[in-house]
Image 1 (cartoon, helix red, strand yellow):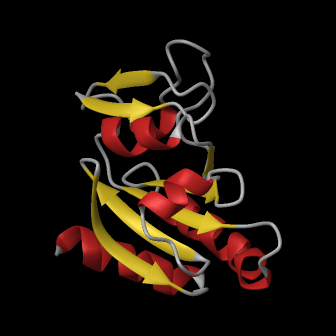
Image 2 (cartoon, rainbow, N blue to C red):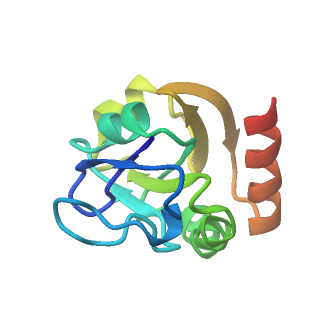
Length: 143
């Protein structure tokens, strides 16, 4: 069983290996667990998402006022579409979740952190195109 945190209601779902994760729905809110769109995390859902997910989670730390963040957003979405359901892509607004950004040492944005089993395994600052994001995640997951 793989645990997947619902991007809509943050319920933890157990997805059996024989069930295609791309088609799985949340047992609580019945929404799809994967939509090809990065999950919008909050201060309240961030920790649960990175610690309870049975798959790697890539978090884009961003802010509304950040030009490079806005430029990278469609590329991050393309990377999510290419890699889900093997990897969860999520975004955390550093202005709305200042404590989480500070706790993870975010000094510049956009910064992406790849979490596996709740631990940081890779970090990348600066805007990147989708192909580079996908390659960075693949390299980090393998390493």
